Image 1 (cartoon, rainbow, N blue to C red):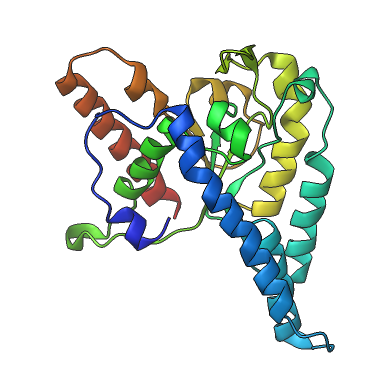
Image 2 (cartoon, rainbow, N blue to C red):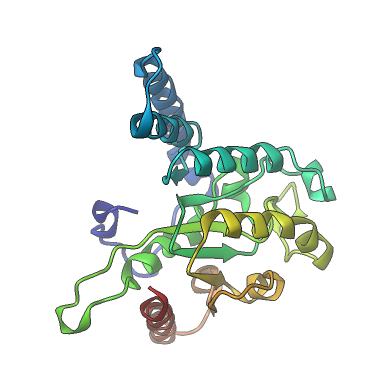
Length: 264
């Protein structure tokens, strides 16, 4: 999320776009990503190039082919990310593959400072192959913006790199026709666990933020600092009075900011 995104003024707890509206709004973005790939490949030089320039071009191609993830650090990391995608996009390690519209892998930066892990893709994510883009994803964007670490009294926001993913790559449907999802099972989480471990090894985060209690329950054992925050979906479905929701939101922001300030 760039500074322009962070500057957008979001209304508090008003109606968010429906799933149908989300898909209608986001499909043109996916088409534009495809056009960027074609444009980039058309301008890359055919002659052999050397050194840092060669690695930079490799990163450009990888970033264009997987526009949701920004890869930096050279050819080796780009190659490892490409291999990760090649292995896990056609994954059939559990029955969820049979009903998944897509395998939702990640969004953000590799390497990263912080890895955010939710529990599973929802309807919008399943349709567009991207994590945290539904109505709860909009609140997640706001949470990420408001919780950035600050430097003392100057209140200057620190820029850091983060990666978003889920414990499961496939949506665990409760009712496929109604497009509603359920909590992951232990067996489903175990089947997807090697993917998360591989993602951690690739992204090398300084800490992990579990978005929701379910994600924390099924998270892998690591030596990294971790924290669990309230899932943004809570604020969409909770029926508490408005003032209580605002207080819960502020507590969530401060909890996440405190964690980030300790590890970054």
